[in-house]
Image 1 (spheres, rainbow, N blue to C red):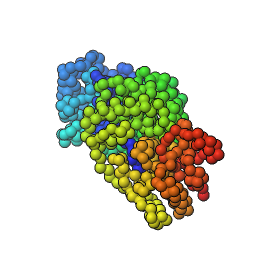
Image 2 (cartoon, helix red, strand yellow):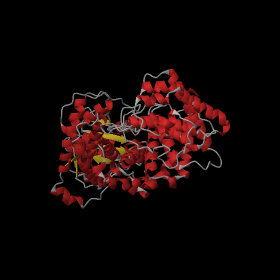
Image 3 (cartoon, rainbow, N blue to C red):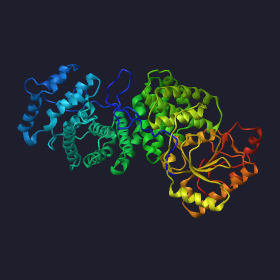
Image 4 (cartoon, rainbow, N blue to C red):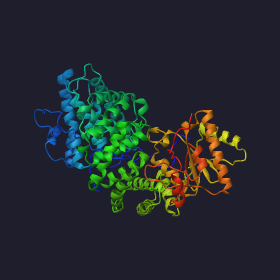
Length: 620
């Protein structure tokens, strides 16, 4: 079955608009519930950012100019922004120069709005937005605007919350937003598609625009045809200007692309894969320049990309490998929100990250989560899921004291999440899994939707016809866990048909965190788990071989009167080896049983058997 079924979906998304809240968190404005990583924006303020508009002031005193050169922190300052004469002045400038107008004054005004919100340390609230939008009815970008005016205007208005979709949404405000965005998209597409490209298209502007567009989609904006065209036009310039991006731009761009993928834009946005491929080598090249926020954003982005099927290339592996040492090196500089995102990302990447790296990183970070009494519910949930995956990985290889230490943190996080009484299914599922792991009662009950794939149905029918006496149940929820594909109840055996979503990048080799957690929880509940990668069921001959191997396993279990075999303990990175020579000699499936301490007898037999990989293709 091609679904991931034992882990948090990763729908955590921060609305990183650069506003620092008292608790160190940026306010969430995602259309979903969860928060991933924050994105530190590159400020488009013309006075502080190289390459941005060098705006020329209006003649005479003007409210927007006045705000650009003083501290903005009061209602009086906002009132200066919404005076009718402000828009009248912009209209006069635009009309005076006509098709020669480059948009610089409009960009200056947009920067004034952002400066106000930055000083207020929050985006525009709904009341402010409703007061501002009538003035923007005639605020339209044109194709004559230069690149700097476009990037400053778009980025500033997005950062300030001008395009935020509040609920309930006034229809006139929504229409004004749509019209303004339409003119901006049209001008950006026009600039990007000129041949030859305008000389003023710069790397920072490309990064800021893609960040802003990803932010809009993440906040609930419907991906219109114009937005998709604008994103595609910008992605072309990512590859062309890849050598000009600094560390912050690389982090922002990969975050933006992961957000677009997370909002189902991958299949409809040409050039996204190429842009990701162009950026990944830069991570390793500029690794010494990344600050904690960059590291967090990048690891979250890579986890999200592979979770949505990004191919596991050498460049991706090298980028992840370059970032992981930085986590421990800068461990004291991560804020709690960063830590929650890091725990989620490293857990989601599953076996792509070496177990010893995971455990050392978790040990150095998770205690800071437990010590923070003000942790938001989203961060508690993310951290709890990440710690569970780490414990699952440890349990699949050995019983260690490290697991006991992490389980203490798990217990604390579960208590805190339980006290928050979450009403969403994702958090409730995490609570159920943690309670099962810790042996704690849990009053939450989940009802899961089930789906039987064609491959699963065909394999089940073939297995049943081959062993008519075998009792088989489908889509059974065991111990309140997500449903398993096939259950052999008389033998306490679960068969999971693993589609590409269970593997990092869909490689059918490297299991992700959700898959590892489900396997470990089933083992902890007393079941043996047999994993069959779905690519081993693509031909009648390979299906027959899988069924023959299951027959052997069932016969062995019946001879043992229903006892469940156990696997040998293995070290990090070593393959799984079962104690049953007959099964191991014939089986190319993955079999998981209870992890126990290795006995002296099994040690003596270990050298006589050839080790098998965790998952491998059946011989042709």
